[in-house]
Amino acid sequence: MDTTGEGSPGSGKDAQSLRQEILDLKKKWGEKLLILTHHYQRPEVVRLGDVRGDSFELAREASRREDVEHIVFCGVLFMAEAAAIVARPEQKVYHPNMNAGCPLADYADAVQVERAIAAIEEVRGKGSVTPVTYMNSDASVKAVCGAAGGTVCTSSNAPRAFEWALERGECVLFVPDEHLGWNTAAALSVPDGEVVVWDPWENGGNLDAAELGRARIILWRGHCHVHTWFRPDHIQRARDASPEALVYVHPECHRDVVALADGAGSTRYLVQAAEQAPAGATIYIGTEINLVTRLDMEHEDKTILPLARSLCPNMFRITLRRLRDTLACLPDGETVMVDQEVRENAQLALERMLALGGRTPTGA
Image (cartoon, rainbow, N blue to C red):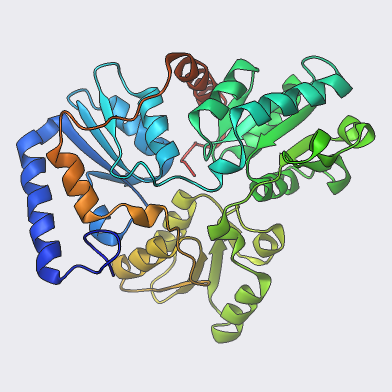
């Protein structure tokens, strides 16, 4: 495994040297520095972080640390943006690799979402649709939803966000993960006939007025390739190999996969499922491979296996070398910047999510 930089594997000596440099830089900055690591990061990066977690809980944690001035977010870029949105004015947010984007977030941009809202309102009337965007979206999309009276949700509190949105308007526009949307609609017992999929690349979303007029939930055509990789036959193979095994998956998976699993939930849910399983249990988990591998290493009394191998290459872009270089450039390195108007409206959407109550928002 490449532990130092992109392209060529680093020797154990190289990795050891980088780890020591990072530790020395952490010691130099002390409590003024906070390194946040998402669950999907490489194990060697996670070990050097100060806090491990999901996207939004990490962002909130940083804003609560009164002594922290420099926040280094090891995850994909939308996560660092969320940290910059909720950070205090005196805090700076850094990202070790600005090219570590999120293909799921890229399925929707602000202009497309604005056009979709306008098209739906043209059919159903002003204020008829309440937009809800998944945390896995860029800051400008969150801002559009905030300005339009909508909110943000995570994979754990999506049902409550949908309920809230339906209380406010006739229908929900959910951006950008259609599979989390289908699974949330199923959890709320919304009939399939009241759910439609908006294709942002087709005129009118590839929906006619009748379809838009009857829909309660309008889903954006987008997906996470990490989680749509899993298929029903993966679950069947797991059960054939270990009939007593437990199977847990992320709700970004296809709904036929979710229906066959023993449970589905956010990254935090999957971590807790592994923690709470009895000693001796065999557990298959359908999510990013780095998390599954680390859970197996951390729970020696259990056998934790990937439902299938699925890697997020963008999460993998954060290396020890990238982290070292970022820390070495403090306090003058490139920071994650969010336009003030975008920040204000995105923060409004995030604040609405926190005000919803219900299921605790624990990230993507």
